[in-house]
Length: 263
Image 1 (tube, rainbow, N blue to C red):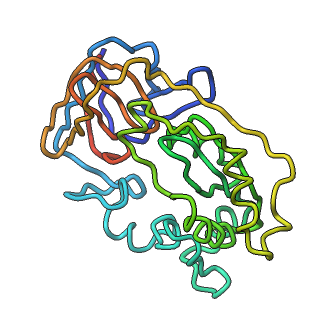
Image 2: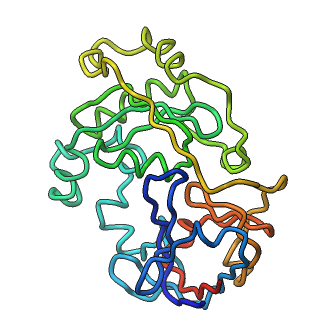
């Protein structure tokens, strides 16, 4: 079976384990049923912007050409640093985008993927966000009305809880033995007074299992720019990573690359 197309991030749906699909060609390819099979991804030397479709030599921020990187709101600095949101200053790159993505309820959450981390996500995007990060558990602790407010609280809490994931430990299922409710209680007295009205009274932990039964001991990162053809037996899938017996490939990193999938 072969399919050709431009890479997009893996699609996933909540299930036990999470269902994964490769978004390539005319129809998503269900990957869970391919565990244990040999697969091959061949980079065909062509890249295209996922926004405007322009052919490019280099992509920026996971699939944008340089003009789209410079002008589109989803590529603005405030997307990775939400505390810098400038919507209220009247300088948003696209007010409609700001209204639908930033001026919406956001969760501040604790997630367990390697160690405990703090993060933010739109309330409506929470499950997708947690599965994208390979979290095995996630606990929303506050709900605020805007992305900027969420970013401000996240920056404050990152003094006490990391906001990064160790991707190697995450893929090897080396998960810290922490109770998210206990971490939440430990942070309770560190919440600034202005955010106390937004704390969730009785949040529930969301749990996730992944099709990642036997990760290899050594995690070698595969690179389509240096190794245009990668192949191996599919051992697992977690976050946005394909785990092969030859190494691991971060699919999101190569968004916009034209590839041939062969299973």
